[in-house]
Length: 630
Image (cartoon, one colour):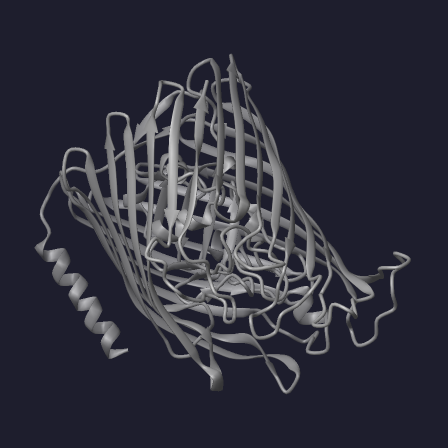
C-alpha cells in the first residue's frame, strides 16, 4: 500500500508540471446520419454520448480504421495491442475454442473474464454464456464493429453483474453519412492452410440504412488435430423516423467447429467442438437537445455440442456433452440535462438467464441419465434500477455519482455505488479520481452443475480506486493511471465445494502515449504493471506494446513490438511463468482506387513461448491477400 501511495504522489507531480495545448477529436454520428466533430466522445461510461474529459472513468476507444488496418478477423488481437493492462490468451494461429484447454480468456488488471468477472457488451447489451458466465471469444468479429470502447474498472452501476472488472463495449456499424452504397471484399491466405474471407455491404437511402456482412475462416493450425473452421454473418437495418427518433434491428450469428489436441504431454484424440452463438437486438432511440435515451430488447444464445475426446484413439467416447443457454433482456434508460452543466441518467434493466447442460448418446442421440450433478437446468431473473448524476460545478471541476439497486432471483439484493471527480487545471489536461464497486452473481455451473456446486453461494464483490492524469499537446498525447483493487467473497473450490472465501488485492500503473514522430509516421506506446497478492493464471506482471504506424500515399505499414513479462501459466505449488517478446508487422499498398494488396506477419522473431501451459504457440506465421472496395 505504501508503494501505491508513492505512485499517487508521482502522478500529482506529473499533473503540476503539465502545460496547455490542444485536444484530439474524432467523428461521431448523430441521429440524422450527419457526421459531427465531437471531442473524444464515448458512450460506455454513461449511456449517452459525452466528452471523455468530463468522465471520471478510464476509457480507451479503438476506432474502425485501427480495427481493420491489420486485417484481423477477430477484434481481440487488436484490442490487446491498444489497451494497457488487457491480455487475451491464445493457443493457435486462428480460433480460441471453448471447454477444457480453450483460449480466448480476457484478463484486465488481474480480473479475469474466464469466471465472468469481465463483461463484453454489444451496443451496451451483456454478452456471456448462460451456464458458465464467461464471454465466447470467437463471437467477437471485426465485421460488426464501428469502434470498441474499453472501460477499465468496475461498470456495475450501469451494467450490473459480471462488469466488476470492466467492460468491452462493441459499438456496431454506423450508417453511411451520405446516400449510396459501399461494398468491401477482403480475402487472405496464409500459413497452415489458413483462409479468411470477409464481405460487407452498406446502403443508405433517405432515412433507411443497412449493413450486411459475412465472414469465413479456416485453418489447420500448427499442431495435428487442431483444425478450426468458422463462418458467420451480421445484419443491421436502421430507420430514422424523424430528426429525433430512430430505430434499428440487428442480428449476428457465428458457427465454429474446433478440434482440441490436448497438451503436448497429454494428447487427446477426437476432442471436437461444434458451437453456434447468436445475438438479436432491437432498439428505439430518441435524441433531443436536452435529453436522449433508448428502449431496447435483446437476446444472446448458444447451442454447444462437445466431444471430450480420449487419450486412446482405439477407445472413443460414447457420449456428447451438450448445452443450451440464453440471456434475454430489456433495457430502458433516459438521460437528461436538467440545468446548466448537469446530466442525469436513469435506467431500468431486466434479464432472464437460462441454461441447460446434459449428455446424449453418440449411438442413439438419446439424453442420458447422469449421476453426480453432471447435468442441470437453471432459470434465473435479474431486475435492477440505477441513477447516475454528473455535474460540472465550474469550468474546471466535475463530480459524478451513481448507484444501482440490483435484485437477483436467487442471491437477493445488492447495492452498487460509485463516485468520482474530474479536475481540469488546464484546458488540455485533466486529473480524475474514481471509487467504484463491482460485483458478480454466481453462475449456474457454480451453484448447480458438477460436484463442487453450492446453492448457498453469495455474489463476489470488489472495490476499485483509481487516480489518473491525461494530457494533450499539439503533438503529444499521454495518460497515466494508478489503480488499487480490493475484493472479497471470491468463489473458490475448497475441500471439493465452491465457497465464498477468495480475496483479490491488486494494484498497478498504466501508461499510454501517442506522438507523431514524422509527417507520415506515428508512434504509440502503452505499458502496464500488475502486482497481485493472490496470483491468477493468464495475468502478466508487466506488458508493453510499441507501435509504429506509417501512412503515406498509397502505402500503409504497421510495426508492433509487444513484450510480456512474467505471464502466469500455472499458480500454486506448481507455479510457472513465461516471458517473451513478439514482433508483428503488416503492410498494404493501394494498387488502384478500389484494390489494395496486404500482407501480415506475426511472431517474426520466431519466439518459442506458451500462453496456455502445455500448448506451444506457433513460430513465425504469415498472411497475405487483397481488399476490394466498391
